[in-house]
Length: 479
Image (cartoon, rainbow, N blue to C red):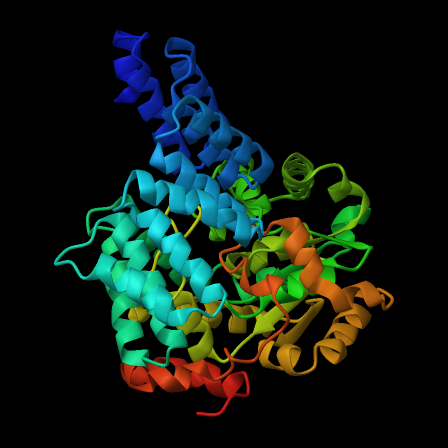
C-alpha cells in the first residue's frame, strides 16, 4: 500500500516514512534506511525521520551511529521527547547507565507521561537495587484498565521488579498482562508463531534418522570444518557461555546474528522444494557447497572479515531446530548444547521483554513457552540419538557453580588451549554491546539467583508439569 502511495505521489514524505517503518518490521534494514533517506530528501531536517534511522542502527547493533542520529535529532528539535528517550535506551544498552539518566529525565520533563522513559528509569533503579523506587514509578503507569504497547512493556518491567521484591504471584500477573498486551490477537506475529510451531512438528520426523545419519564429513573447507554451533533452548545459558568462550583470543562469536536465515531462504532455489525441513534431503553436494558459500558470505557481511580467519561460534538457540541442516552442510562442526532446568528456562523466557518482529518470537503466556519447549526439545532428543554428531552438552547450573571447570571442559572438547582471558568475560560483555535480550545480566559477574527460581512460581507450573516431566528426568533434574 505504501509503495502504491509513493507511485501515485512520489514527493509525499510520509509515505516513504511509513514504508521505512514497514521495512523495519520485516528486518529489511537497508531498505528501511533507504526509504527514510528519501523522506529526508523531501523534508530535510525532519527530526522524527532522523530518529527512525537511529532506530535502525540500534536494531543492527550500530550503537555509536544510533547515538549520533538521536543527538542530531535533538539538535534540530530539542523538545522531541522520543529522541531523548531513545538516546537514553542506547546509552543503557551500552552500559552507560549514569549517562542514560539525563536524557530519560529530560524526556519526562518534556512529556511527563512518556512511558518508555519511565520504564528505562525504573530499569536503571532495578539494576542499582533501588527496587521500591522502581516499583512506585511503574505501579502508577500500569494501573490502567487497558495497556498501550509501551505500557505493556512497562508491565513486564514491573513484573521483574516485583520478582526481585519477592512478590511472585503479582510479578507473574504483571508479566502475563504485559505479554498479552504487546501483541493483539490479529497481529501477524500470531501467525508467525503458529507457522514456527508447525515447522517444529515437521521436525519430529523430517528428515528421517537414517538420512541424517548418512551425512558425514569433513567437507575439506577449513572454516566450515572448524565451525562451532552453540545451541539449546533460549535462556539456558547460551549467552553466558558465548561470552566466556568469546573471550578466548582464538574464538569469535556471532551475538545471535542470523547467519542460517539466508541459507534457509535459498533452499527452495537449490532443491525446487518448499517443504522444509524435508527439503534438506534434496540438497546435493553442489547445492551444499553453494549454501556453504552463502553462509560464509553472510558471516563476512554481518560480522566482518574476521569471520573467515578466526574460529567462529555461531550462537543462536533457535538453530537447535535446524540441526539436520547443520549436519548436511557442516558435518564436522562442533555442537555445544546448553541445558537448564526446563522450568527455569521456560520461566525466564516468559519474563523476557522483547519487541516482536520477524526475527523474534513472542510468547503470550507460560503455556505457549512450554508448548514450544516440548516441541523443540523433543526434536533435539531425536537428533541427539542419531550417531555421528560432534556434540557436547553442558548444564547452566554447572557453569554457574564451577565456571572454570566447565569452561576448561568445553575448551578441551573444542581442541583449544586454556587462556586466562576467559576468566574476565564480564569485560568482554561490556565492551561488545550485546544485542541479546539479557545484555545487562551477562555483563555482571556470574550469579546463582536464577537457579531453581521456578520454585517461587510452582503453582503456575501445575498445568505444565506433566509436559515437562520427561525433560526434567532426561536432563537430570529433580522433580
